[in-house]
Amino acid sequence: MKIKLIVGLGNPTAEYEHTRHNAGFWFLDELAWQWKATFKNEKKFFGDVARVARPEGDVWLLKPDTYMNLSGKAVQALANFYKIQPEEILVVHDELDIDCGAIRFKLGGGNGGHNGLKDIQAKLGTPQFYRLRLGIGHPGDKHLVVGFVLNKPSAAERELIDRAIAKSLRAMDDVMAGRQEDVVRYLHSKQE
Image (cartoon, rainbow, N blue to C red; front, side, top):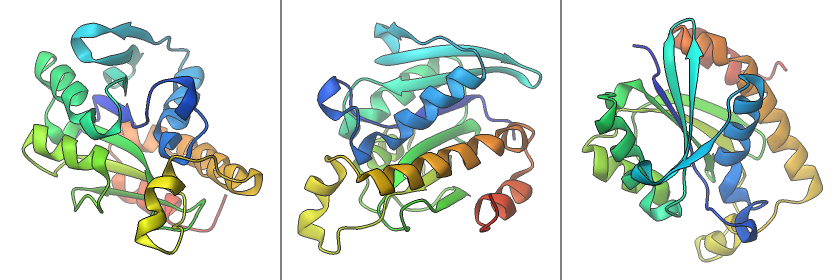
């Protein structure tokens, strides 16, 4: 299955730009830079959108501007318009349940309480889309989660997240070519 839509999750506005919850946006900005893509705001897709001509075909990049808990609205609008199936979608997001700087790649699964994933699953009617999970670590107490994800990581944590993003970008040719086992082997390993 080929990926036709890559969604980076985050919250719009400068207030949230550097917060942990915006790791998906950070990834997508770097990917767009590498692929020489330019975002433009598309009201009908509720977000910033870029179209990239790849050897495998056109790929859409999407940064919803709906705020995290309504991310599915943007994903559903673009996927429906271009007839993109859930298993042709890759969602890149921050992940509390893995160590800061660790990366996990998978198809389907739960939402781990992540409001962006919850809404996407609800709008698509299935959890069967790919996820690139960028570890941000956990504050240790569930009551501290909201403040944790909506605050800036420390300089050391940001460096770990940036390294995870760089490593994930190196795997994108394999992701796009559908070599999912190679992607998992590389991203889940300790190698740089």
